[in-house]
Amino acid sequence: MDNGYWVKFESWRIEPNIRVPHGIRYSVTLHDRHNRRVLGLDNSHGFTPQRKRFGGRKTTWDHRHRRDEVAPYEFESPGQLLEDFWREAERMMAEGE
Figure 1: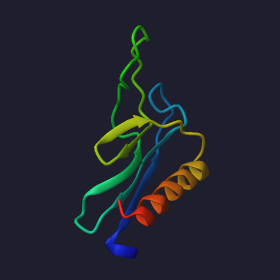
Figure 2: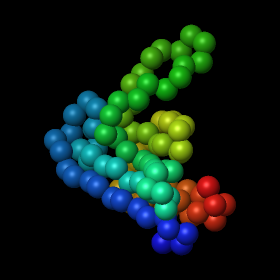
Figure 3: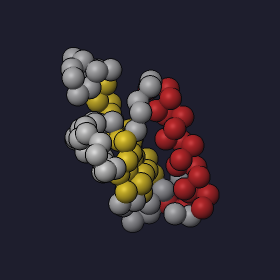
């Protein structure tokens, strides 16, 4: 891709469970020319978002990596996942992040 960026897609069906109720394990990542992940959407490990004051602790599996930042991601469908990924990837590549 432009400026040496490359992407990696991995997905497989699993039995739906409490952690992955939609039954799809996935990892969609954008890497720079130095092979560093700069963007990723995945559910390969649990993630506990920082809570605000008195909120309960909830571990979510669907999340987004942007450089060193990790935030929850709301998985809706495989199609929406790809749309969200490409929108963010194109924005990051255009800005040269």
